[in-house]
Length: 80
Image (cartoon, rainbow, N blue to C red; front, side, top):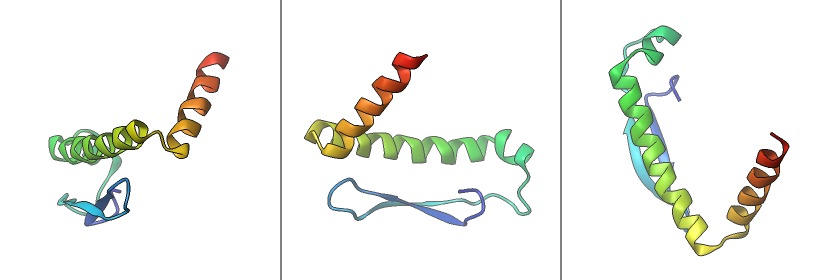
């Protein structure tokens, strides 16, 4: 995401653009600038929050993709 100037967050169903998140970080972008920047962390938190909301909608609907994810996660956690 850090090589783009904007990122699209899509809705669950139907797939539509829910939000366009501007990535207004100075260039060139270095790892240190991204990991230590309050602005970069704010962008990441906004994107993750929106993605989490859409994932929860999918889980609430009981979609096959959500069931597959939960099953795979449970198997992975059982290995640890």
